[in-house]
Image (cartoon, helix red, strand yellow):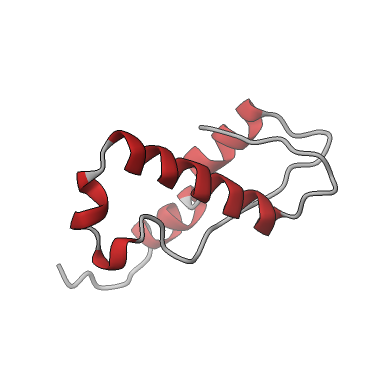
Length: 86
């Protein structure tokens, strides 16, 4: 899992734009043929997901949460009387 830290004066949107811009330029510089293979020459899509962590969060806690998210609901559905289609 990768994380990014920033100063509070940068918005999440600004950080994402910077990261997308820098990485796309570097990829196009190192692999110029990639741009020709992309639809419209755009490397990144418009959307992104971002989440923040408070002072009590750390990488292990977040990684554990992400790895196990949804398990509670998976157990509920596995043990239910619902009919499975496939």
